[in-house]
Length: 329
Image (cartoon, rainbow, N blue to C red; front, side, top):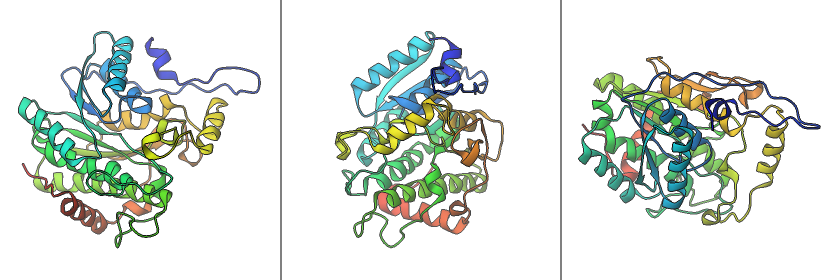
């Protein structure tokens, strides 16, 4: 697989299918950069990881499923034969697993320069919980990543790291269910998903504020992929979804025809831009096309749900209390 085929994200030209304008960004030389990408065993996360490795980063792939992880490592090395990439075990829905993963890296003692928090789950048909009893979207998308960053803070500080939090256009709707963040009453899958991404975005902004105030040297950026046929809405039997959703079939059809939406490859670009830009203030990146559903990655206006410093501080405190994990150096 050459670099052009990795980057372009082109739809095939066929009867009734529009030609997609190539979209890509150029990554800087990342030689000597130790990078971690969560959710990189397939789909958009694998594209992000592969591009970083091809640019020279020493890649760590935290995976829940070793079989998928082995396939991902093979794909990375097929695209970038000289890439440095290793698997480690991580299940973000388990605080014990997060702590174990972090302990291994802390024992290594090597600074972490780049952390892309990309993993996530979306809209299981019924309310489900993590092993720690959290609503699974809140627990995986937000609390697992919160705990990961808190545990890794010494290595992130040592590496003057850039942390990218992958949110969603769903963070531009809904609200934090402060009275019932684990949705034990009146569960709504989409509202719970929006909450998890709002919380995660607020966390990323609070990380930036605390880093500046405490002199941690960490920059924190947000990204969102727009809409593309990623695996979030694919069949996930472990979440109670035995086949892909109707929404994903529509998304795939529009993406293949180059109508409004992105591809898996182009959806990865905002996170890559967020990870490698020299913007010292972090920033928020997403597709720049109509409705920010697809198109070239660019800076975005911060969603209204993410603009309250009080909410950001509150979600940080709530996350510390729920997980029992406190950021310390």
